[in-house]
Length: 141
Image 1: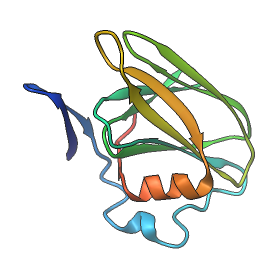
Image 2: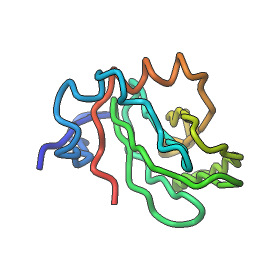
Image 3: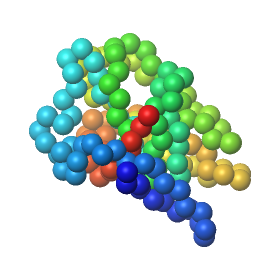
């Protein structure tokens, strides 16, 4: 199992396990972003900042994202809730998902009092695809 390493200070490094699939380059195939007809793809991307964030989907652990990594989940149509919790805050992002579509969410670190705070925001299809193409897929749970 490979890892994506990120360090946020001297002597403080953490890693997110990477998925063995898709192999390098396969996300770049023409059908890579085509969700199943009766479901949707939900991509959660962590950008350039350090920090590891646990992600919950509808209250169930989905996995963790770190620097330049993403998670992907197939979800059924309807309302869903993404959650991430740190020692300083909790963010809940409600989403209403339609079948046959892609949804992209960026998770990011914000300055906190003693540890990083977490933030989440939806991305456009164009921004989301670019973010995923520049990241490695995290293993998820």
